[in-house]
Length: 371
Image (cartoon, rainbow, N blue to C red; front, side, top):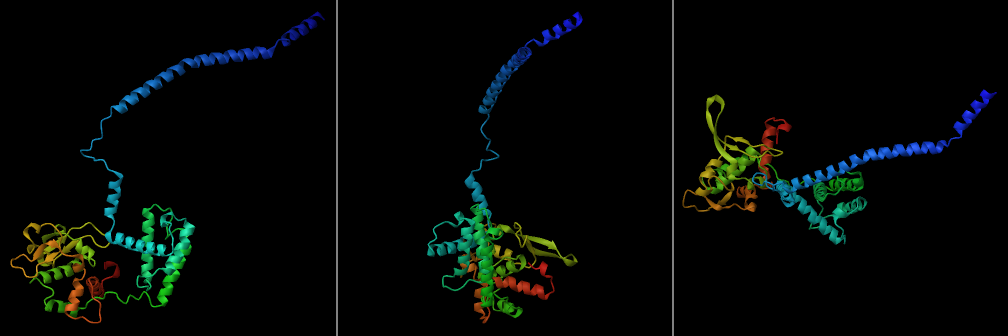
């Protein structure tokens, strides 16, 4: 009995202890010791960070100024100007032309909001009306192809203004595209799109008349300019007027090449940055070098290719120091056709390219090889 009482008293004494107080004391001591052990590293880290910041600041302040001797600094304006200069001039002209048409129409409808700030739903509705109502200055309808060009011009403008949607691809403008397609079909049913005023190619007999009448040749400045214009269009794929106007003497060089049978022939090499339709080339039948010999001495190796013609030259120099006007250059083939009285056919500078295409087709060249 005594043993049992002793055990009961023992356990009662143990469980009578205040365990909550005991465990709380242990936890507080442990936590306190942990905080004390972390205190020293925290102070050290703060000191190191401040030291590192001081060194970094000192290093940054001591950096030398940018070296512009090899890599000059570029401004935002210079970047934009570079992008602008790289754009095709005809494309820029088309965009500006159609934007003027848009502004004129919008003004007549008292639409004061800029096209680039319109919400997609609003612009889609406005474009539907624009497609149906737009007219030329003489109130006649535009050709169906012109409406496509118009759409592309507006698209390019909005792209430069960072407009977040595409008139051509975005679903938001499906209605205006449907109206544009319906307008084109309507114009087609009304005999538009037949291109009655399109330039036509000249045939072999008419080309022979150009030569026999002295309009093409190397006997004077006019004939030499005409034949060079024709050859550049035929051999290098120059288009209507702009390609000719932008050509410079330094784009060409005279070379000698070996042809069939081991013979050597004189040719002209055209060095140009590649375009979507041509990449330069050689011409074995050319008179550019003859024209260069007739230029003023100081412009023999540089300057615009087409110079104003001296009508009654008194020396071996047939060309003036001034550039030939763009309008004059743009009407060369039209003048030739009027001189030999080609009636019932519209001949323009573009007729030269069309004549080449007709010759290649007749010779059986596949379509994909014809530029």
